[in-house]
Length: 272
Image (cartoon, rainbow, N blue to C red):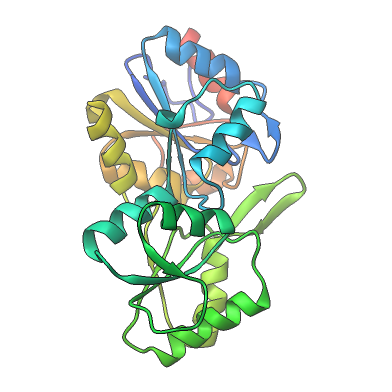
């Protein structure tokens, strides 16, 4: 089967499917029609799927509850989030650091459970970490800006650069847009942790023993999902069910190998 750009899709040899979530396999609480059949087909082919998400607002436990409620077979091993990537980075680069976190209660809890010394108050810290905060308030923004302004040498990271998060009526601001607000107020730019960096993809490939030739990344964003796959040296599939338009994919510097309207059309390509 050919993709929407007329290119013959070569997906039959893929054994590790790294799937974005929001805008790719579901939209908020509505699962896309082709998601369950595609996941079933991947398993029938002897493959595995892992959900790679930049959304740090939920823990793996939260995601498990969400996807199981949609009927998706999954365990903890089927997820890798930007929050998990942030924890790995903090442990490796900043052992013992005092971290200020602007994020959801879930993100703060994940950091604490991982042994990170974390605070949500204005006090001397070694590092500021911001995430996609669905509980964001002006008071939180004020505290973040105060630390970044008064503590000039503090390191500054953000979980992901996504500008928007798809929802049922369109989009809401994601971590990237929140970072723009903070930059406008403080002049500080964060170092982003999640996609488009290839780190998350490489970690999962190594953990599961998959080669680049056996791996494919599927997502709805050019500048995160597709860019991370290209930088990791694996094939990529863009879907038109989320943020990016066909023209976005067509004109991208780091363009996907194939573009399909949704995961249901990927399934059709596999079954031909």
